[in-house]
Amino acid sequence: MTPVLDVRGLTFSYPDGHRALDGVDLHVHRGERVALLGPNGAGKTTLVLHLNGILGCGGGGTGTGSVTVSGLDVTKANLKEVRRRVGIVFQDPDDQLFMGSVRQDVAFGPANLGLKGEALERRVMHALDLVGMADYADRPPHHLSFGQRRRVAVATVLAMEPEILVLDEPSSNLDPASRRELADILRSLDVTVLMVTHDLPYALELCPRALVLSGGRVAEDGPTHALLTDDALMRAHRLELPFGFDPRTVAPPTNPIDNLPR
Ligand SMILES: Nc1ncnc2c1ncn2[C@@H]1O[C@H](COP(=O)(O)OP(=O)(O)OP(=O)(O)O)[C@@H](O)[C@H]1O
View 1 (tube, protein in one colour):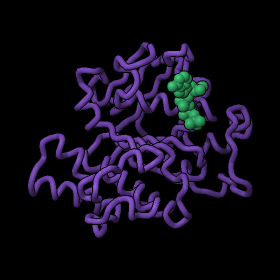
View 2 (cartoon, protein in one colour; view 1 turned 120 degrees about the vertical axis):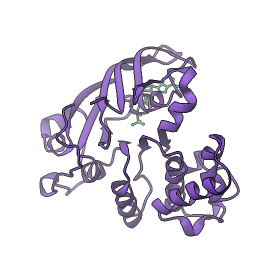
View 3 (tube, protein in one colour; view 1 turned 45 degrees about the horizontal axis):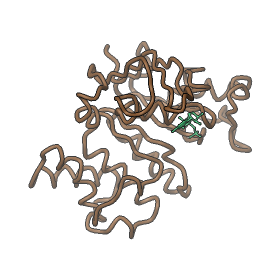
């Protein structure tokens, strides 16, 4: 089975010569939810920015290796299609919301792909429905709370009907109820998810599989529950659970393709 995301031997150095990725291999199958863990400076954001060609497609820096999304190489020539297939929800929703209304923000991407009229409206309202924000379509994004803006940011990406949803710190700055509601939304989506997070309980709750990136390399790749209950591994990669949280008391999450070969 072809992975929906196939990263092979990816290396990358920023223009100042700093090597941020050092031979990353990563294969994700359709429908998986994978957490990308690792200490500050491990290369997580650098890796994510390669997945839709923000880095590694002839801009600054130098690199080797390849990224393929459902068989399509991430190259400069394919950027438009790659960015439809890979949607990134950035940590700060205000990086993604810049129009006068929620509806216009969510319509922006699909309209650029040529969708118009009723088809566009249907696409927008469906994406807003998925994140529980349909009633806010006519509100200016800056009148919404942070948690609501994050949901709208997720909708802007879902409106592109991506094959892979990448989220950078999706639980940051959310109150406990909003955090739980976003988890419910993410679990309900029929999409492959790659989630960068320092929130290890959130990773455990949502992602059956986790990768630990360290020094620009994949240091570990396995079931999230096994990684988070391995004290030596956790210490080695500067991963710390919140005080009082015991992953052993949490049932490992599952998703339909847990048994696929990787
Ligand atoms: N524009 C840049 N120029 C030079 N070096 C950079 C640049 N951006 C990041 N780096 C370096 O690349 C390495 C990886 O950074 P990256 O932001 O990918 O890490 P990260 O795992 O996302 O960290 P965090 O958890 O702190 O967000 C770090 O050592 C960082 O200092």
